[in-house]
Image (cartoon, rainbow, N blue to C red; front, top):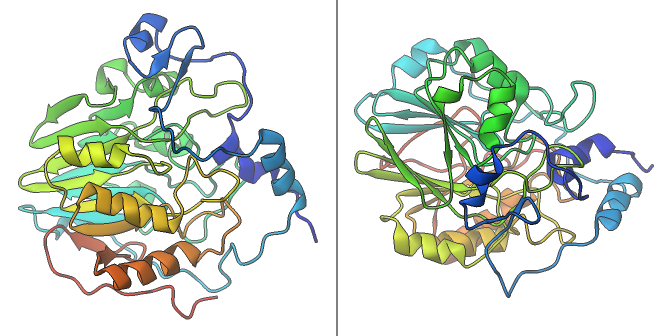
Length: 362
């Protein structure tokens, strides 16, 4: 039976059609970015002569409407390690911890201070509560138990990375927001004070307390409706705390920018790399597993930590496919792989035994 899944399209393809801009910074603010083309009112990716073209918007929409999906949603429960306030408080304040919340959402404890990356606690990656991709599992931490947040980092404005109910629920607990150019206007529209938001172009850097943040390039796109394609910037992020360097790829297709990041930033201890929601119809904006591994090797990082999978049904590949393919490549190439369970805590620099938790699950 064919399934009409238009709600699933919005998180990834909400901006495939051109249109007028809405809610953004002033034109002068954006025009200072080399990535922004004022005549088009849009941001652009870096030139990439090897870029594989995406299929047309019509082809993509038609596929979602008429093609059946198989194995994209787990039948068995995804394992979740639930965490409460006591468990979070018990984490050593002298080191750096990464807590996997699901998809690309992570809670970081950076030497005693709490940070969030792309937090999505809502039940769907969608603009509406009644349709769109639904979570495979509950968050490992209740939204009301999220501790006071020193900094909240956003990679771009798609629904599976920027969730309005989550932002609104946390706004009294977040001290500072670090976002790509243009994304700040979304936050201001939702009641976040302008003085608590910092917007970054690629390669801009900021020291906040003991943490050094750098926005770096990614190859992706942005938009939350059919009319605001690429009106805001997208980014990867470098997060340095003490002697530890955490890199987060955000959403990205494979491009030479990963090699440039290696050249311009200190050695990366752990790289949180996108691995999921890929397809031959849109090769330029999400990496196939083999490309994720190549991007990781381009970065020269020590540990490969997989994100952007196991929470939402956003493409046509089997839900285990990203994990299985990268795990096989990691074994073949001797890569130190981290595939933590939802709710698992990874302490940067601390040895751990990695489990293929998805094996045996349907």
